[in-house]
Length: 344
Image (tube, rainbow, N blue to C red; front, side, top):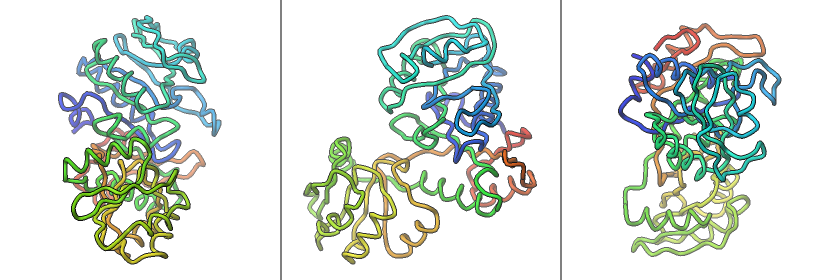
């Protein structure tokens, strides 16, 4: 089985996101490009940050270039457009601005390497992706780049591929634990009540917070952010509360504060927009789950596959086959691909 077997004719917009820099995300993207070319698929490619440069601008390590074939559509900035080795035909200069200039949409008229740097907001990435589909892309791939996990948001893409690797830790078991944790977050149960979901979504879009009682009555919690707001959230929970909707990020400190101020948290479900808003490490998450917290999402992320890079830029590496097989066992039925060796 190949990565594109999971995608072709099933999704219009997908993302590739990395657990960290040098986890193999760009290699995964290049693998998808190769498979798409073999199937004569027209791709559209953009990014939530900058990718395709020869050296990582943060870590100064060598990076794989992004090589595109003739016909590929890209959405990138005016500055990075100038660095392309591929011959690009300018299709549109959009009104979306970044620190690297306006976002432009171009088509490769001759093959070569490109740098991709796309919009920074979810709405803009979604809009740019739709534009590339209108220009003829059969599949748009959003590269996670600097935001890494944020591109997996269902507000942007329909499904995601997670890239993980040895760069996370010298301990293989720790890498596996962290990768499994991320997939568990992606797979969190979605709120089933459709009408309630719609009402809560409107509040979340305003970064708002609220409780919902057994009669589906909504009560706003006057908070700007959940950071250091756990006490206020705990005070808002009553015996009649069924749900607590959190319009921003969910972090460890907030749940700890709630635990310290009320036992009622065990009787309610906490709801966040999607798993990209959760910033809680694996061990803390396990502790909270054992303590009785229940967390659901408005929009569930669909993880298609996990790709592995057993090599770290620091010079150490894992046994490739052992690493892949262990992850396959832990993540089943989600497929695991070693894009460095080309194994699925």
